[in-house]
Length: 257
Image (cartoon, rainbow, N blue to C red; front, side, top):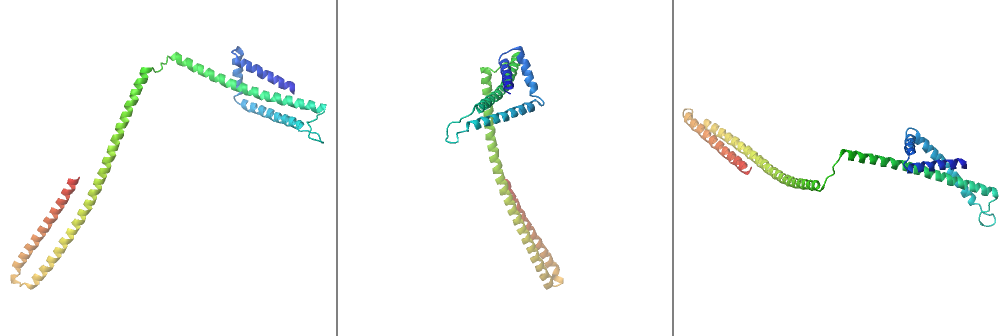
């Protein structure tokens, strides 16, 4: 077991040394790690790491169990026999080696990640330099600042115009509401005048009936003509007054709008 752990540590140390220095084996090791991280590789690696972690926990528990042994008579330091001392040293060495293995595995994973990132950044910079991409100079920056100032002025102007439009819309809404109320008042006035006209017609019909019954048959032609003339004049005067009121009211509405 200890020989196997030392072999794993030696292999991991060698891998780290090849990753740190640029050599022909570096690309081969990186490609091998890439293949190990694809497919079922991560599952296998996690399974092995979990197994090592469980064995490490068992070894640490055994070490603590040996250290907790005390004398029965008094709380003296632990007194171990030679067999227990050998087992204690064995568990301590195994736990130390397994912890070191996990630490080196983590270092290999991080080194592989950062080497990949460095290669990617290097390729990106090479592509940029090949395309001759020009970075903005001081003049370009000033021109863009002027454009930004122009856009800010345009935004302020548009905000002021928007506020003006909102005020106009609110004032027009108030005007429309006033005209609506005035039109409702005119309609009520028109209905009242129609009712008065109907009442006047009814009164004239009553007067006509009374006159027709009281007057004689011979002299009935002239009074009836006079009565019809009076009715016609009354209707004309009533409708002319209604028309004058309506024209005056609508003229007021147009003047306000």
